Image (cartoon, rainbow, N blue to C red; front, side, top):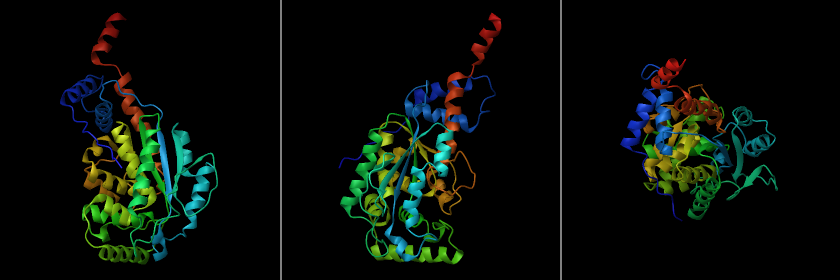
Amino acid sequence: MRLPDIPSTHDPLLASELAQAIDNKTKPLGSLGALETLARQIGLIQQTTKVALHKPAILVFAADHGVVAEGVSAYPQSVTWQMVENFLSRGAAINVFARQNGCALQIIDAGVNHDFGKRAALMDCKVARGTANFAQQPAMSWAECAAALAHGMRIVGNLEGNVIGFGEMGIGNTTAAAALMHKLTGVPVADCVGAGTGLSPEGVLHKQSVIEAAVALHGEMSEPLDILATFGGFEIAMIVGAMLKAAERRMVLLIDGFIVSSALLVAARMQPAILDYCVFSHCSDEAGHARMLEHFNASPLLNLGLRLGEGTGCALALPLLHAAVNFLGEMATFQSARVSGQSA
């Protein structure tokens, strides 16, 4: 399987042109703050000063995790498929926020332990009915991991827009994400785990011990795809493939919270330049996400105390992308304002 090769967006000449275009707007230098940084980044991604966003989409990948058998979640595994039904009924938070902001929403069954049948609104990419319990064996075989990556790349390859957000749903996936974070960053497990779906302090300590035992069981490994296959989930692996393909297509990647960021850890280990294409929508309230953002040297657009997942942070940050693009394209320059004033 060929994985995308992602070029850096580094372009000193274009960066200078973008800086000049931004600084010449009718405002004090730097007064639009993070929106100016965002406009420059989008310009470098799109390789132009005439930036535009079209057909933004959020992909929500759902899957189950065998490690739930270890008692690492406050909710049973059946909540995963029940939440997918909620997405399909358009009753979840991500449905509301995506609809509010004119963003297409696609729900993908990456590996839910449930038979949904044929559903017009659900993309069936089920690799298996959930991963294996990584506390006892690798979560995925190499073939399963490769299949998930390929599905993610294919889905994004068929999109028409140039902005993509990533969401997820899967009971137990904060445990998988914390294990990935520990293995890929070296941050102690205790600083990676959090309450997830609402664990008590004792439950968090249990989750920590499950991950630490699993890490010891599987031994040393350094290759990102080995780590992904051992500790990840089908939805996380599919997001990795989707991210890599989106960056290859020079799309703007909207990164959601803790789970999606764990997928980015894998993708960035393979293709470091992918970070040039990433806009970090928010800082999740899930323990560990702030440390992930530090690892990426990222400044999130929002800090609302969210820890829902589903891509909700992406949907809420999307208006800020539009604001950055619109001020660069529509705001008057000092030169045009003077010309207009003289004409009057």
